[in-house]
Image (cartoon, rainbow over all chains, first blue to last red; front, side, top):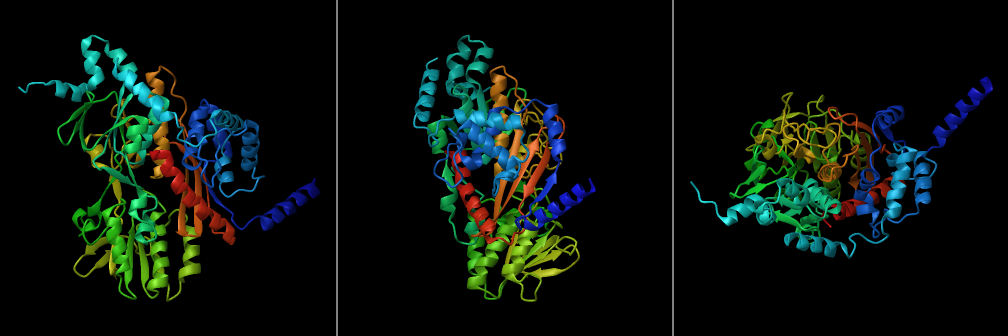
Length: 142
Length: 432
């Protein structure tokens, strides 16, 4: 037991020495407090969670022309696997670990569903304008 | 008594109400079929509200009331001050919102809410009736926090340049005309204010420019705070690039406890006086004033103290359940006052409104702020903040991870590219 503790202490130290020099500053509520709040209220909807991604990944995750990759139409299982790896800091990232660390498995799965359902086409979709205009026109004849 | 014309009725009720509501359709049918969502402000919060409302609901009528014909993004405006971007590239119009999302844009200033009648009065005399009113007018500045400073001076030779526009260009021109070895004074206000890292980003950009064109010039930040976001990253940058802490430092940061809090401006001698009586002379003086909720918010009884409180579940105001507050005017602490936050608040509000109109549960709100800042073109930093719902009468609970100084130039370079990428994707998300 003592040996094990010592080993983990050494491993911890090694990790600290080898970790990239970009140690981040963290703050606010702990992971446990996050989990407590998640348990206390219904899970935010998939749309609520997914729409938080649009500022970087485009509306409905459908920004295909920038460095940040599109999410629209992404395979659900790939999304889930990647997000969990970001969360655990197992997949190297610049920003995504910092974003992903707060999400539960269920939330990640809901977002995976949401983005898998989006058309993998650059936003705005060509038909969007037309459908709204049609609606507006029909509406004005009521 | 004034005679009510058909035109007046259209103003009051809109054409749909005139053709159905007045001909006997129930008011309930009117509300559920073509509710009128009126939005005060065409900035990030207002525009995001209009677009995301339309994405959810093709039937509602959406109107934005905005005094300006175009919107100039604040993210990117420090680049304009340092003369490596233009205001034109930050400017968007409302044509896409109009044509693609069938949003009605009224170029006017909203003045007064008639809560009982659910009507909004505009400066030119128009009156709009609303079912839901989303208020997102941005902040106002407390010019009088610094004795001798005023709105007129900010619009003249002492630009605050904290709302991207003409003042941004005046400040740019003053920096360009700075005498060799001159001094730029920048004041940084108490929290909360729009875009917390921006005073330090601005100071960095100006110092970077001076390094090449005016290397003996100096930037002094006079701060009303003892700490700020990305403090460690900026101090590290200033040490490495501008000799912070040496006699020849090109940049200096004076915290509140070191006497940085500015109380007085002397325009004749071009000096700022701080709380401990120190006098700083500046060839360029950029006072960034403290902020409060926009005047529309304060005049309509939506604010308590400087900001407008709201119910956390849906951002409806404490004053009226059909009036919502988002963006910089909201008392949203611990959320920072950023465009990113305003856009995500807009998504919560529009989901809540759509759920109510369609008789569904509005669900649990969730908000992130994944923001970026620069010290230089190749030196970026990021913060990822999450805000979890903790009850309708409680503030959201925050957790965050932000950049620390890194010895790895690739990390900060990639973060800088992320920052520039974000500026583009964000504009597209809101206005296209």
